[in-house]
Picture 1 (cartoon, one colour):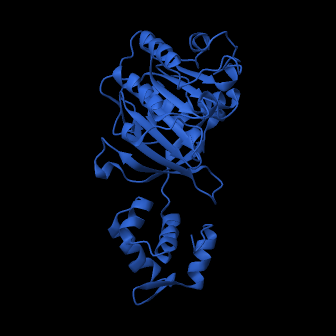
Picture 2: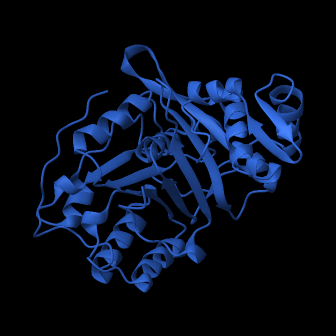
Picture 3: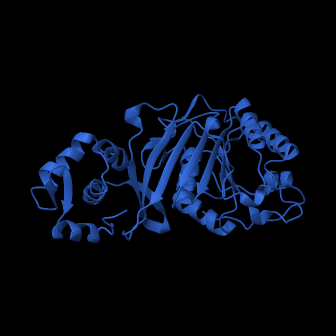
Length: 327
């Protein structure tokens, strides 16, 4: 799949209209989605915040290809109603973001992905996401095209004023909700995103690439999930796998050995088992079993009253997983 270099145009709306899409199998005339876009994750008109300590752009790219392709995203959530995705970003060079999306895409997308980067604009014509005129123009363009039902914002600090008023962002979100358009905003290390008020978010997903592994392994946990049941909000891990032909894909990753070591670290820092269970994505009964049937019998930990103490074997375990006993 080949992508074309971008061309600068006279106005932000020209950029939206004329920037080429990533190649797709077809462009449907009407992609207005039913209620659920992605099973157990995203509904039309929702506002999703990706809080990323690291790995956020990879997550955003995978979400884009899954929604446009009608496939699984994040290794587990099936897109039920594919739709076009408008990806507005400024966190990395345009060619790099295209490369990531293309490597994650198998070339059989049902709907288009259009990527707009800060490089498309000069400092004089750069749009302002808080400007009401541009908000109205972008909203009208998206509503009229009826192709792009999902907007992804990643690293868009260049498209924001120095001081952002909450009411300006609330207005943008309200505009999109009024036409059942979904907004997904990536906040990497607390920067680069539009500051969406808590009350305006439907889902907040925290993601972090784990240290100490040769492969890219990302921990995903729900901070807020308004439409999900409790058992659907469990922490999960995904791994970026290399495929043939330079392609990549996220697969589910089971990390019990690492999570056992993480449990040792957390219990040494006096975390209760209920909190450890939420952090690791395991049931409390599993945490109790790891401590009583593994850590203590194998002398990873010893118990002094209610307090757990680290042994030499436990210290080696934490070191092998790049975990510090004291967080």
